[in-house]
Image (cartoon, rainbow, N blue to C red):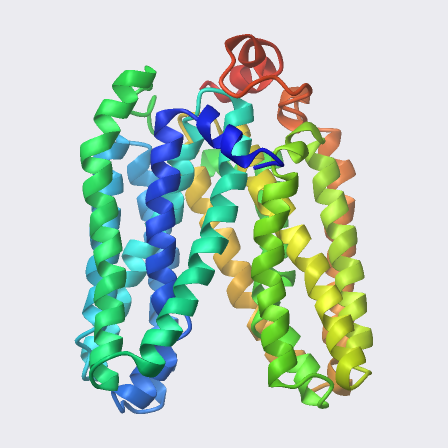
Length: 441
């Protein structure tokens, strides 16, 4: 996005606009139930304390396996059927949570939902990657990030209001929220089933991938393997710590209270959206390797501020923590859309489904490893080893950028060297030519 977000949206292809619109509805639905699963199973349904933990673990494990399976299917079948099936499975899974009253029912819902949700991000990125030019691909990933954060935040707000004071019993309110989330997935599946064929015919897009490839082929490309490892590290120091290491470190010694902590989360959502609105288009004209290095430096500074905040109290601690989260949020908003675009440009048409599946696995791995790292290190020396390790990891991310620049094709590192209009064919033929040749798209 940019200072002219509406102009950028109008310049997107019909396919990209349709995917963004559907993801907006999906993200709102996901936000309705995002914070509540543990509370719902434990306090509302009155299940044993081990069941929420087991449910989340089964859901995460199924998501990893399911993501790899969906990536393989996408590289073999036309996307229309795959996208519709993914959305229906995810909708069925979250809908099943509405009727959970026992451990077997909770674990069944976890398996179905984990299988479905693991494919949602993969198929959406796959559809964005089919954009006509590398510039539109990059802008689409940036717009998707902004839409996801804005609509998820709105969903969390609405879900919280309904859960706290909506009509009916508490169990009925949570049932309604999970059914509403399921309905958004089913609506998305129906929309893609009806719209994708017409959109692709109108835009001249291909209805099927060029041919299958294996995960060994994806990981056998050294640059892709390094990029996926870097995404895992990025996820570990950002997503993986935002709800574990960050609040654990800031609240352990009473530096920041619940009110201050909620303020830092609000900063995260607002800054993530505003960063895309203000910088999303401009960052397309910056080398992707430079964005990666800059993000590592921003995150190192962010965790240094968090380190200082944990040694303060009251307003000073809260303000310093919010400043750290602001830098963390800017880095997230910059790097994840950029590395997603880079990975799709490098992967090529034959391996795009599997590459996006591996990207989902990398983000999930970092998100899971983050809390494990926090749990193991927070009790040591008041959390100082954790924050020190995170600063060192951020410095490592910063060093990956220059190393990648030496190996990336020029068109992959800088796909949009000049601000031509989105979808302009001469721009696609000049600024994006090396990427197109490398990707086979």
